[in-house]
Each structure stands twice: as structure tokens, then as C-alpha cells.
Amino acid sequence: MLYGEHEGRVTGFLIRWLINALALLVAAWILKGIEVNSTLSLLVAAFVIGLLNAFLRPVILLLTLPLNILTLGLFTFVVNGIMIILAGDVVRGFVVHGFFSAVFASLIMGFVSFLLNLFISDSGRIENAIVIIEDHRR
Image (cartoon, rainbow, N blue to C red; front, side, top):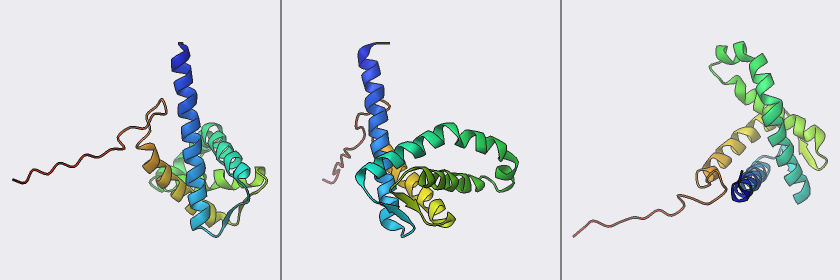
């Protein structure tokens, strides 16, 4: 692997981590049931949620697959909420007040991070951010 490729992956990871932290901040701003006490706890909580989503979430989704099929995938929102509750239990300064706050926070985080990730490439570069509107009237 070339050094430039490795650097691009690290930059991409850092950008996506910051996007998830921003999405978590938006969720905390909208919902009264999510509290973030400091910037450090915000960054750590975003990192822990990322780790939980990478390692624990696939196992839980596999174990709950019949229930997920039965609910046409809606149970995934419950699993995402559980990941946020677990992060709230682990990270000092990140507090989740209730199950429904966690589920709605996961919905908001998913929506905000989806919108922001539309403009970021795999290497962490900003793409597609400029929209050119041409006027074809004569």
C-alpha cells in the first residue's frame, strides 16, 4: 500500500468521525433526552457509537434477523437505539434519557450523516458540493 493511499483512508475515517459527531450534536440539539456535556464527550461518544456499530451491531442484527424480517426491517431502529444507549452507559458526559430518545437520536443521526456523507468521497475529499445551474432561456 502506498503512503498516499493510507493517508487518504485515515483522512476519510477522520472526516466521517467528525460527520458522525456533528450528527450526534444535531440530535442532542433537537432532542431533550440526549445530553452532551463537552466537546470531548461528543467526540468520544461518536467514536464509541462507531465502534459499537462496527462490531456489536452486526451480531445483534444477525441474532434478531427473524424479528427484523417480521417487522420488515423496522426493528433495526430499535437496534440502533440500543447502540446509542450502550454508548451513553460507557461515555462519561454523554447521557441518554430513555429508549425513545435513543431511537429518535439514531434516526436523526442517520439522516444528518447521510446528507453530509453525500458530499464526501471514500478518501475524505469533498465532492459534489457545487451545483451549477445553467439558465437556458433566450
